[in-house]
Picture 1 (cartoon, rainbow, N blue to C red):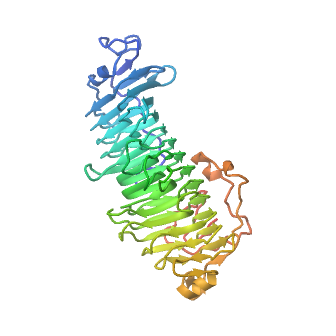
Picture 2 (cartoon, one colour):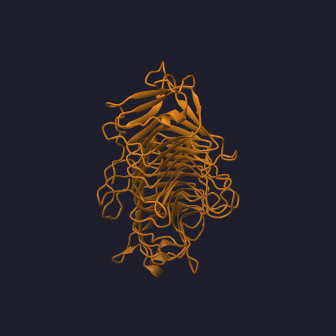
Picture 3 (cartoon, rainbow, N blue to C red):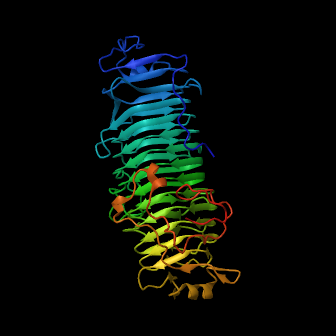
Length: 497
């Protein structure tokens, strides 16, 4: 797996030229000093940039047009850098098109720039920053808004880093990545410390979802961490499958961790609108250490759409879902099977607090294991035909006088009844599940929950109180991840607090 929170490589120019661009400049100037700057993006495109070169736009300027760089190549020690100089950031105004396109470029860094479009409903048909192929490019400390397709987009690229981005008021997504199919797979992707919010939907996309926070597909090896996604998806112009805060599909070895997704939505008549998702064709991928709350859809969707490549061998662990599924799914963790190519997932050490259901599934899915989860619900805790699933060592609490387990063919009022009839929560003839109040620290209001992922480690809420019946009762799990939600070390047989 690629490195996680390592800082972006130093982008100081080594041996190259520094070119300046200003609205008061002249394209016939040399461009090599702030006193003799270039004026237009066209002059930058003609600049024959190479290793160590920097292009700096005057802070506060608004430069119209689309900047397109093709086959510009730096090196690991002498990157090509595009940034701002002076006071504040420069803004590239893409108008009806994209702000910046890097095609088949390598070792290019884009930082400390803003990109704006005319708006998702105002004829814009582009992206804020679009990377097409290439390798080892970086987007850092960039703001992108007003683009119908996405704020940041990549496809068919390798070792791209997207950090400290704010993407908002775009159409399809704040940040999107696509690979596979007509493009090579995107490989070794890193997205970190970024915020995607208020990306409502693509008004021209009437055949598929839109309004996502961060969505990546066709990825082999990737990490999304310390990101926040909120208030996305509320203006998707269709009914049917909908957007999610942070998710991946058709991916292998994707890790989504230490993120917060809250108050994400979908349009009236639309589905989903949840926090996190491993969707069709996901394999060997992990959702861990995330906080999801107050989303219209489920907190954690584990889903296979019809016709997708096999979905299998995924993990959902050490996550928290609070009051998710407000208008769709009505649960904290939801399984949906569009065809039979979905199997084998380990769901362990998650905490779900939900007014309806903790876990629900539309189908009986082979190879599911639910272990050491704390499941608190207002209605039945588990809903659906999960006959093939193993449940071991989970703690259950229903706050209403409802059947604890709601199977479509039979409802079970008690854990003992369920265990005797199905063998669930039985290991070597011993009942290992329990029904109890988990005794956790609760907030007075969901507005007290953090929105900054950096604060998750210090979050006081949803920790177990010392006399909790869940303390020290976890069953062994091979390969626990090494730490819990709060970054405390966890041995394979350690407690879940």
